[in-house]
Image (tube, rainbow, N blue to C red; front, side, top):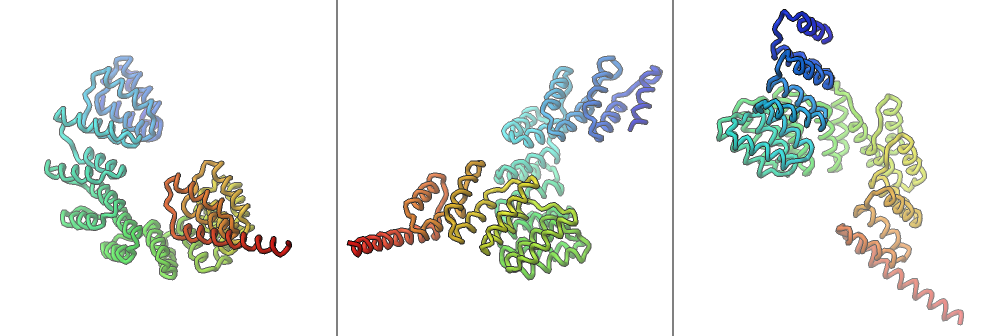
Length: 435
């Protein structure tokens, strides 16, 4: 790149060669690809101020796209200001970049405004504009709008590509519309659009999240028949789906097959292995695998620690669970509501309800909000000690926070009332005997 830039400057300094805007745009694109966007902008300003070359839409789009990629709002605004000042006409690519920009910032309303501006100006949309619109509508959960845009582009004679289908399939899968995803997959095959690993992974994940693991495994077979080999995400999705249905042996076999095929496991794969051993009650093997992954340079995440903390807490090894919490904090990982809920549950199991309440208060001080499981654990612990007043107070707090208590909460509260009345009767009987 430096050789190219040096050659470009020699051309400028010689004054004997006319500098074309295409040459400038090519150099700017090279700098942007290297992440030197400010340097590219400075070069354009220099060429413009000296009257050597006048940037066109493609030149500005190059810089605009680079600033969008960096999520640099100031840079984006500056390029848009210069385009307006120089009366540079926006192209379809400009609009596509802007839609991507506003959508990535979460300003879906402005992205829609840009799209409607194209309509008003009779600017012909292309597949990239529609794909961007469909993608962000799916990400925002507006599947109805995304589907309408998909139908509209087809009516306009614009052929959807793999990215368009991928975005819509992702959206309908997240919405649980697996039949719609299957129709889109079939349509892709009919139109001769190449299927890819991302689309298969998306659909397998959609099925697994709904407990339909056998449908996910069916897709894996279809995928492999088409010569598409699964990646680490494929195997992680399937193993996780199997674990949710307590099919642990199949989950282990899936991950072992992944390793045999030369696909390197990542932290998610190893955490799933640890989860399986924990569910099987083999904490020694889970701990060994945890320490081994650290030795091999794989960094455990919050989920990895939570998996072990939860397992130790349920086995009443609360001291060990607390040690793991301290370890994760030392490594810069912040305990979340699941970390605290596991520890709270463990303390309640061993009868240290006051310690559980301290953890609950610590969690609140850190800005975390308890979930149904958190409240259920403490209410159950309080109920076992007959502390019904405190239990009902937490129940009221749950309702205020919009949490829906389950049967365990009601059972615990009724039990606490019985225990409170029994304790009261016992104390009254002891009082009478003393008299």
